[in-house]
Image (cartoon, rainbow, N blue to C red; front, side, top):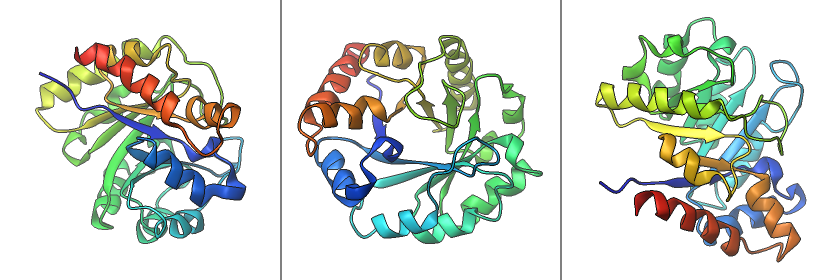
Amino acid sequence: MSRTFRIAPSILSANFAKLGQEVTDVIASGADIIHFDVMDNHYVPNLTIGPLVCESLRPVTDAFIDVHLMVKPVDRIIPDFAKAGANMITFHPEASEHIDRSLSLIRDSGCKAGLVFNPATPLHYLDHVMDKLDMILLMSVNPGFGGQKFIPETLNKIREVRQRIDASGRDIWLEVDGGVKVDNIAEVAQAGADVFVAGSAVFGAGKDADPHRYDSVLAALRAELAKVNG
C-alpha cells in the first residue's frame, strides 16, 4: 500500500529578514508542513524563536505548522503556541515533569501532540502514552543547531518506533529531524519514517540557486520518496 510522505522544511535555516516570503515560497514549491525549531538556550545551547513569530506567520499561510519545543520546563509555553496558531506541538520527555499531563495540555489547547526523542533517549517513555500521541519525532542529530550530519544509528530507532506504531493500530506520524537530504531520505523512509524535516537541505539549496523558489530540491526529495512507494 502506498504511504503518504510529508516534507517539513525547518524555518531555522530560512532567511529571517524575509521569513513570510520564505514560508510562502517553500509551500508554493511543494512543501507540506512548516517546521518550527524552538530553542531556549537552557534545554539546548541555542536561542531561536517564540510564539510571536508563529503568530506573525499564521496570517501569511494556511500551511500546517509543526512546533518542536526544545524548552524546559515546557508546560508554560504550550498554550502560547497553541494560541499563536500551531497545529502540532511536540516536546522532549526530559523537559516535562508529567508527560501525560503535558500531552493532555497540548490536546486540550486544540493542537495535535507529539513526543521527541534525542539520539540517545530511550523509547520507554512511549509505553503508556501512545493513546495521546499524534506524532513521534526522532532526532537524527543532537538538538541545538542546524546543518548537522545524520546519525546512522537513528535508522534502527526508526524501525523500532515504526513497529510500535504499527502494533498500536493508531494513525501516528513518524517524523525524523536532522541531516535529512536528497541522498538519504529514501533510506530514512524505508526504515519507517513518513514526515521529514529538512532545513539546510531545502532553504540552503534555494540560497545557492534562486532564493525565492525551492521547486528543484523539493522535486528531488519527492523523486527519492517515490522510489520507496514504487
